[in-house]
Image: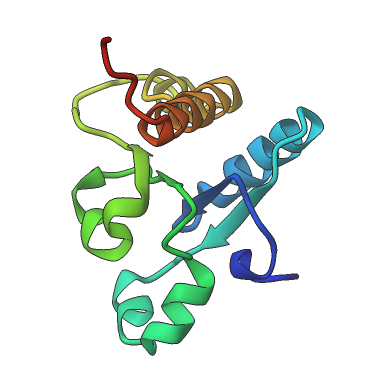
Length: 136
């Protein structure tokens, strides 16, 4: 498999473990729409952080937006992804009680929500890149 830096992805989905299957399913759906989507499994922030900067840049290029999928608190993502972060699908509240699949769906860990978040992130990125139009 090619590292994201070896092709021009529109966005990278990064997940830590159990969420990787969701990222892969989202990639399949988004690529059917014509988008180029990278998927990175990042099971340990600490191990990744200990890698040489060149390796980190190859895996998570600075010029590609990143959407993290984390079935836990999203707080830890910013130091590892920085300004490339397009968003985090994470758990910011606790106390839900239901079968696991139901709770995950309520927290947004489902294919439709990941695809929607990717489209929102790409739209936001396009808006930031548009030149300002000055009033005449």
